[in-house]
Length: 391
Image (tube, rainbow, N blue to C red; front, side):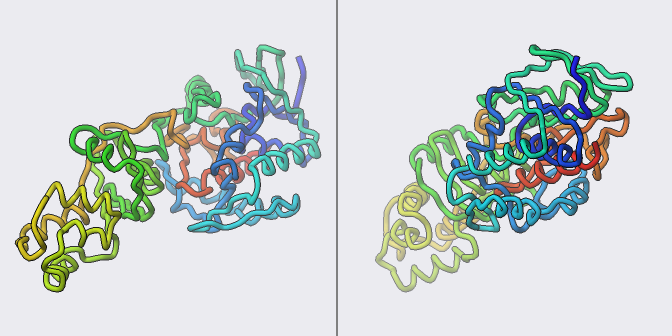
C-alpha cells in the first residue's frame, strides 16, 4: 500500500486544479484517473478551443438547490486568477459574446498548462486506475485495479453523467450515498430538446434554421439563438433554458425580441397592402421560418385581405410560441449534469463533507450547474482550488 497526504479521484478540470493547489502547498498528492487521458472534457470543450472562463461570473449564473453555496468559492478563486495562469503560460485567448473567453488556438494549450502545473507541484498522476473499493476509518483506503492507496484526505472530482462516451459514471453519487450524503437527482443540463407531433414536423421542415429569440420557462428567460433540428430544438438559448426545465414543462419562445409584431403587421398592411404575409414576415425572421408560419396561418392572399384577427394570431405565434418538449436529448448530448451531491452536506468554503472527515466533493459532482459560456469551468477551477487549500 502506498501512502499520500491526499488522493484525488478524477483528472478533469476540478481534479487537476485541486491537485495543483494542494501539491503547491507541499502536500503529497495522488491524482487517479480511470481513463487513459487526463482532461478529456477540456479537450473537446468550446469546439476544441476551450471556453475556459467568463469575465462576468456571479452566483446568478449557476443553478443549485442552494443558490448561495457557490458564492464563497467563486469569490476566493476568481476568473482573473485563472486568466493570470493562462497569461503566465502565454496562451493567447479572445473574448466572444457575453464575456466568454476562448483560446485562440487549441484547448490542448489549457490542458498542457494544467499538466505542467501538476508536474511543478510534484503531483503523482496515474491514468487507467479504476476504483474498486473505498474504505474509511480515520483514513481512506482506496483500492484500484492497479494498487491500493492510503490517505487522510479523499477528493471526489469524477464529474457527473454527461457525455458518457468520455467515461462518465455515477461514482460520485454512489460514494456519497454510501457515506450517508444525500444526492439531488441528477438530470441532463445544457441539452437540446426533442419534440413530437406537429412541432416535430415543423422542426424537421426548418432543420438548420437559426434565429435570435427569447426562450422562457417559468420566470427564467434567455435571449440567444435557437436552432431547429431534425429532432427538435437546440442552440444556445435552448441549452440555457434546459437546465431549468423539468419533464412536462412548457417553454415560451419569442421569435422577434423587442419588436411589437402586431403593430408591425398592421403597419405593413397599411404601407404594403399587396404584399403577401410571407414576404412581410421575412423582414423580421428567416425566410424559411416566415414561409412556414404564413403557410400554417394564412397560406394565400395579400396583406390587404387579412383581418386584424388573423394578424393578431400571427403576432401571437411569433411572440408567444408555446411548445412542450417530449424529452431532452439525454446524457449523450448534455454538456453538464444538473443536480448532484447535495451542497447542504458540504462546506461552501472548503468543499469538505461535514459528516465525513477528510472527504471533499468538487466540480460537476456537486449540485452546482453553471450557464453555458465558461461558467462550469470556472466552478471547477474555484471549487478545486478551495479543496486544494484545505487538504
